[in-house]
Length: 271
Image (cartoon, rainbow, N blue to C red; front, side):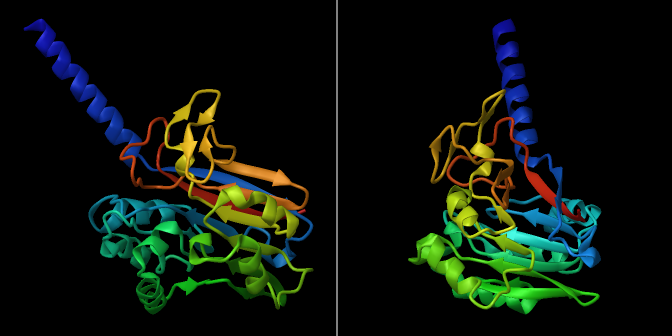
């Protein structure tokens, strides 16, 4: 009887642990300082949401929406895998987007799961109707007090183009002297972002390595394999800073371990 009681307690503890690891939302804050940040954009706050994979955080995504609202963003970047191709349920994710567009300007690029569904145009259309700025290998110029920055986005390589080809298309008419913020799903393309001297790149895809080991980091990530290099936080090389969000949901592997669902904020600061 004692063994059965211990087994039940163990099962309950494991269940609670797994639920906490999947549902406890955290916010990670970063500051990007550069001489290329215009004075009028000093203090501009970006909140990144990535890899939702149709996960649910409260009724109508209420917990997620309120957590994002509390970050006080000037813009919200969604960097792909808003849905999951294995259990496509767009409405779950649209609940979150409806809340986001009431908070700040929302920008979006797709990830590999959107491409896998073959419903890219449907997703683009409904997001555009909600007021989201969709960036399919394109860029927009944002202006404040006569000063500008560029917000650009590229699609996923599953669309059949290389990262370089998509960057060429997205940045073809953008001035090189302006600060450029890029939304892209894949962190493993870091070298290409560096080669193109992109100032700040927002990525996801790695799910934080799914299982995070103390003193080691993520265990495995798509496109990078075991003990991946780019799973969470910021990475710098030459003129480029890459931000990798751990994401919110899961896909094939149903649980995160020591890897809480994450919302990321980046505040621009004039140096």
